[in-house]
Image (cartoon, rainbow, N blue to C red; front, side, top):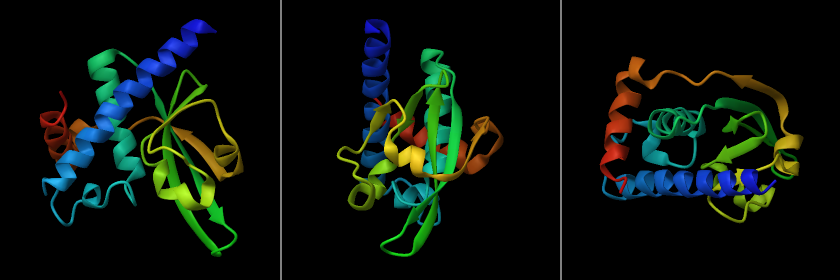
Amino acid sequence: MLEKELRTADIYRIAEQFRCAIVRAKRNGEFNFGDRMHNFPGGCCDDACDLLAYYLQCEYGIASCQGNGIYRDEDADNTTNHAWLIIEDIIIVDITGSQFKYCAGFIEDIYVGDETAFYKKLDRKQTYANYDITQNERLWKDYQIIKKYLS
């Protein structure tokens, strides 16, 4: 158990650094207006997952897959798709969950840990392989921008 806790803390630190790099790049106007990352964390959870997954794999040898599901906000009669990373089938890594802060109880901008009630509540959950960002010019450019802001 201690090993998992240490790994979770390490993954959290990496995810936090990656998210901070995205936020700094966004604040500095690095992402084009038409780029989905321009609106981070809203509306770009799948891109953010693919970018972080590539970073985790290339820099740390940490493999992941992407979880995907539909969030239904009964109060607002609204549905939206959401994506997050899954490591070793048990550790959830979510750097865009804060867009659900007020309706789903996210306290921090980053979540790393076991499946919570929020993820259990999602409809039509599926797991996918992460997209190879080297095959997409826009995502590859986004990755290069983010890498500039990583310390």
